[in-house]
Length: 329
Image (tube, one colour):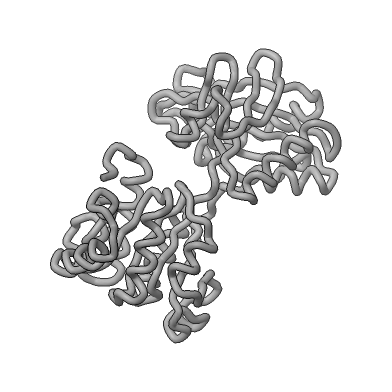
């Protein structure tokens, strides 16, 4: 599995609790062909351990050197790297692009830094939207909830960035993908979802389908789909995909998902199959406007045939709906 860096706050907190000196580097602005987006983070320990990335490897070495010095002095700093700098080739940005990085030395397990991190990590564990805000003039640090006017629009767009002299780092709940029907397509889809940074959860009441032998090490639930989805507390960071092709399994999941604020609901089946599905759900009392939220046939229209190809098409459509909200029905 590819390495993801969604857990930088948790790593920083673990290191602080272990008594290590820690610095946190965050990309706060980019220009041109910068390799990592705003909000990307790198955590550095006093012994030069690192996790995360602020440039995909281009400037990490230089940032680590600055971080070790910042840990000694206890002073925050803004670092600039770019093609216009004399050191551009040395730090790896000779191909172009500029990045600005906020460097924050943290303490070793006491005081406000660890208190803020503990609240941040607890909020993330509870799937509550939360943001950190750092004042670039005073270095004041605070947490913001989803209703805070300083960051409310950024929670919606899922984009960190500058608001006046405050830099806002958005920590929306981790992405989830609930896959109803542990069929053959689900096997490559689970792997692709993980590679794309989603936490996949399989739901299938048929123990022979959702099993350790077919999905080793994966999360699966044998509850009926409507019960399972209610237990999962579906939210705006969740995608639901139904693959069983069995109305007894898929329809309860669809009805439950349509009653929740999931950002994507896709259902396997041909155009004819979906027309029958719509007829059943209409007879069950669901309004046409609600049924229009269903993406069916599921996946981007790339001519997919084999299970892995269908999984690719599903991932493509989900990412499009996530990153281009205006394209949602």
